[in-house]
Image (cartoon, rainbow, N blue to C red):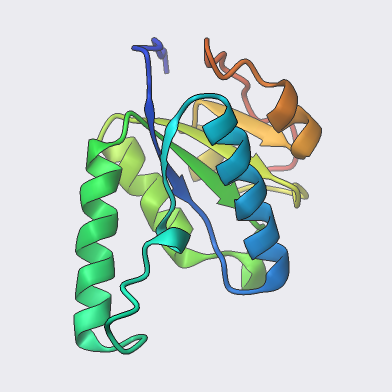
Length: 151
């Protein structure tokens, strides 16, 4: 799949944020991407606290807001926590929605023992660990295909 950088400015940051480790990881990426000059929408920062958590009103508000921002974004950066219990279904859904909408999708992972082929063969770039994320050319968005285990 060929990609062309069209001057992406808005990023939708798909990630789990259910424990301290995940919150720290997404905070790292929020900071890094903003320091690169991107306008970052992070669902973690947009939780509609006026509604009871997991209520119908909360779920609807979060879903509609997240999808609006995903569709308005130029690209999706997804934090992938691995397969099995560590895998966040919402993040995987957002990756798929981004792919279908024709967005660049860049995956950041610190747990890279194997990734499903539906991700390895559809995403623009994979960043294994913080140093790769720090060193990545966020201006030109080069392709960095998955080199690792496939499940």
